[in-house]
Structures are given as structure tokens and as C-alpha cells.
Amino acid sequence: MAKAPAPAVKVAFESLRSLLGKEVDDPAVKALLAKAGKVAVKSDFIIAKEAGFDFSLERPEHAKRGAKKQLTCLFLYSEGRDQHRGFLDLPAGFSFTTRADLLAALPAPKQTWKIGKGKVPVTTKHPDHDEWSIEGYAITVDYREGDAHGMQVTLAGDPDAGRDLSNNPLHFATKPTDARPDAGLVGMALLVAWSADRFGLPKKHASGELAKQFAKRALAPTAFLVAACDKKLNTNDVAPDLENFLFGYTHRMWMSADEGAREKIDAKIHALLRLSAADKKEDERAYADDFLGTFSDLESPFYVPDSWQAVDRIAPVLDARWADFENTGFAKAPRLELYEKAAKLRDAVEIKPERVKLVAGTADDELAKDLVSCMGQPLTDKGVRAILGRAGLEVSKRVEPHANATLGVSYMAVNTKLDGRTKLVVDTVRFYGPKRRAYIRGADLEFLAYPGKLPNKLAFGMPRAAVAKLLGKPKSYEENDHFTMSETLRIMCTFAGNQLVEAYYGKPLK
Image (cartoon, rainbow, N blue to C red; front, side, top):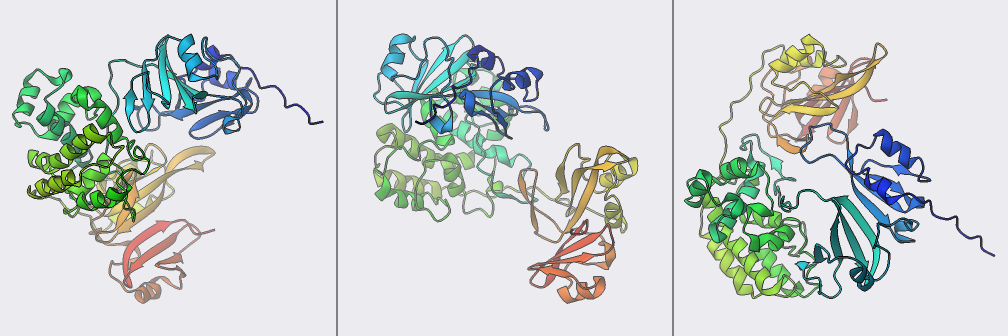
């Protein structure tokens, strides 16, 4: 006879709810988790399968870099879902039962949601979830075939705050050195400008001098986004009629709305809008894709100008998307003529790339050697800080890389033990040749060439054999040669077309 499974660990719902918003290492969090059976604390989740709950962990939206993560969402599971035991102490009125039973036992939900359509009336058949707002927190119930099979609990937040529309289409693009500093805001700025131009300003922005200037196109789109929206975008910043459309459009929620009904026309729309989703020919109805496609004739999307001309360039595409949503809900195939017209109107608007004038960095003959001498030294050292300052490099406060793309140099800061204490030190230094790229702190940067003398008599453009003759026999790995210079120093030289293009200074390989 099979042995009955051990009963689930019971944890009080109110105790769990009280942890929302607390940091992961808060004593109250640790104390409760100690009573929840076997618990795994991961980088983004706390998982308590034996008690039937999880927490998601996130840093507050506007927290300073390095801020500790907080418990932001509580997940409650039905028996067996995602290998969890069923949660035993659901809030009053809630149970893992049918949707009909929940609606009969509870007040009307705050909103009902159906994937592909967004917010729908509560009477809609087979929705994906309902959301209730109760005593300062929100409970969302997920359904599968009409039965509740999971719940999510979050702090309710400000009911007037609006839903987030923030979007950066440039997130995965390489940032050229001559891109405008706020290029990542242009995508959102054009979207709010289109909304204002086509539908007028919403109540939040309807009065005041900024609104008057924006309505007359006397204010650049990004200037309005910064001054009136604080560099963010939510549904209160656009016309109310656009809320459902833009929320799904900016969050890539319409990609599966059609269940194959648009499959035959997807590839044609993909071509007309110049979408570039890898080798796929699918149309995911996503703003980031449309932004990149609209400006794909520019050398880089970072060069999209902050101008009303750019608004006029993308407006026909947004008009077509809105009309498609209004007519089909993105659930049926639209008339192709809608997108053919949009493509023609888009291409009729010419724009010029917007670049900033670069001031190339300068380096004295000793700077590169001095930067390398900082390796292993604490960032609290005044001499180290002075050398980094000469290179225009930020003094790091945590483990991360820093770069000066116009000088062609970067360094990595790490923690290490010095004199029995953990200290932040300069770990590696790298010098770049022209147009080399590196991913630094969330940005894919393109570098100007380091202009000064490199250590060890190296020079960009040197042939591979010449570098080996200068530094000795290397260990070679495809385009990289590694030279162990001492017990504490390794030079890694990177080559392209048999010419030196990067010089990296770090510790020897183990």
C-alpha cells in the first residue's frame, strides 16, 4: 500500500502578505521562511513547495544601483501545480474552485483579463484571470478550463498611477559613440507624441504651458517626456481609449492573440513594416519591432532624431496598428491595404540621422601604463582615483565594468581580500582599437580607438607574428593570444584580419 504523502506545511496567509515590500534578508522574512518547510532562495524567487507558495524578488523601480531586492509578488498554488503542495490558508472567500463559485462568493472583480483582448467585461466567457482589490492588496486568480489553479498577491499600489507603458526599443542594439545620451528615451517620446497628435492630451497633461507647446509641436518629443512624464510612460500619459491597445502593444501581448488566424498575412506585414525578428516571418504586433523597422534605413536606431518629423515617419505605422486593433482585436486577419498604405506614407517622410559631435579623448604617454599599474589596487586609494580621473573613468562603487568609449578604454572592478578585509579593486584593464564593441553595464558600446601609447610597446594594427615576437610565445585561442608576463600579469591580444585590435591586461590563467 502506497504511503500517504506528508501533509502540506501550513503558513498563515496574513503572515505571508505582511512580507510584501520587505527586503529578502529582513529578519521577519527569515523567521517566517524557517517555518515553511524546505525553502529555496534563488536570485529572483523564494520557492516553498512544501507550503504551496513562492515569492518573486525584484529591486524597487527607482531604487539606486545596488539596492537589495524586495518581495514583490506572492504566488499561491493549488495542489500539484508546478510541483507545489496546495496552499492551506487562502484569504477569506477564496478557494481553488470554479470561477462561477468565486464570483458568487466574492464582490465583483476590479478587472477581468483575456489574453489577446486585454481588459474585458466580467461576463466574458473563459477569461484568463480576474483581479480583486482587497484591503490594500490585489489578488489575481488564474484560470484553467474554468477552474482556479493559482493566485498572485501584490500590494495594491496607487489606483490612479496608471499601467506602465515604458519601453526602450534600443535595449539590444549597439550604442555608437556619437549617439545622443538620451537616445533610449526617443522610442517612448515618439509614442506619447503620436497619442497627443492624433487623440489629444489626456487629463493629466491637458493644461499648462508644456501642454500648449506640445500641442503646437513647439516642444521636442523627448523634452515633453522628460519634463511632463519624468522619463517614464504610463496609461495616464495617453488618451484613455488607447490604454488596452498600447499596454498590449508595448508589452508584446498581442503576439498570440490570433491563434493562427493571421498566419497567411503575417509574412506580408513583416515585409512591409521591415520587421527583423531573426529569421522569423511572424508579426508579433510589438512597438519595439515597429520602431526598429520604421527607422531601419538609418545606420543605427540610436540615430533616430528627437523630432516631430520622426513622429510623422512612424505615425502611419501606429495609425495602421490602431485601426487593425479596432477592427480585429489582432485576432483576425486585417486588410493588407491598411499596411500597404502605411508603408507608403512612412517612406514619404525623409529624416536625417541625429548624431552628437564627438570630442575624441586624449591620453598622455604614461596613462595606459598607469592604468595597468592600478590592477589589484583598492579603489579607495587616492592615486588610483586620480589615474581613473585622467582617463575619464568613473570610480566604481560595486562589482561591475566601467568604460570611456571616446577614449577606448574600460576596466573591471571586483571584490578581493586585502589585508584580511574584502575591498573593491581594479581587476582588469582593456584598450580598444577603432570600432570595437563591448557590453558595458547594460549598453552595447562602440569604442573609438585608444589614442595614446599602449604598454609593452604594443600598437593597434600590429600583425600577430610581430606581437608574438615582442611578447613571446602565446597560448592561442582562435582570435586571441594569451601572454603570461609574470605571476601576476597576463596580456590577452585580440586580432581581426591578422591585426591587433584589443589589448587586455589581467591575471594569468589558472
